[in-house]
Image 1 (cartoon, rainbow, N blue to C red):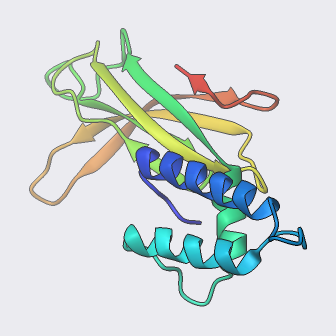
Image 2 (cartoon, one colour):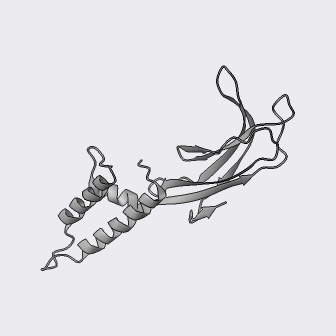
Image 3 (tube, rainbow, N blue to C red):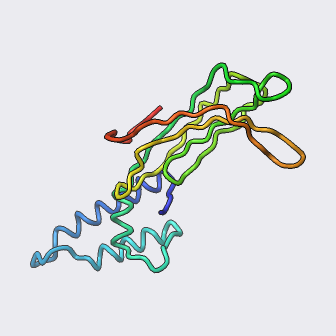
Amino acid sequence: GYFFAPDELAELKDAFIKLLSKSQDGGEENKGPNTTIVVDDARELLSGLGFIPRDCNIEETMQRIISTRQITVTVVQAESLAARDKNGKSDPFAEVHFGNRVLKTKVCTETLDPVWDETMTLEDDSANPCNTLDLVLWDHDFSVLGNAKDFLGYCTVNLEGSEYEEVT
């Protein structure tokens, strides 16, 4: 799929909906949608954002963008996490798994009560909606051999039937 910044996606959705409603007015003789104008205008919009998909159908791309939903997740804090480091602390961070997307919070060093207060926006294609969101907590291990992580915990949020407006 295509991932757009939230403001780009909202702008594209609004523009495509306006284009589609404009095309529904038909021509002078009301022959139905003027598909050529819509496709040309859509191609211009996508080009303006520096995005023109190779070998794709612009009409399908428009429909996909219009039907894409966004979910906003705020990872606030955790309390009383397990100590995974020798100093009796952890360096926790969270991963938010939604469909095939994984976003991470910052690492909070040497604490068992991290505060992230980070907001993330993820997209979901309504043709193949994702019904769960997984939050996985890890302890980040700093090492000269590379970064590693130790499992701290997880939870799954069932989104089935929700409007995907906001889950905090």
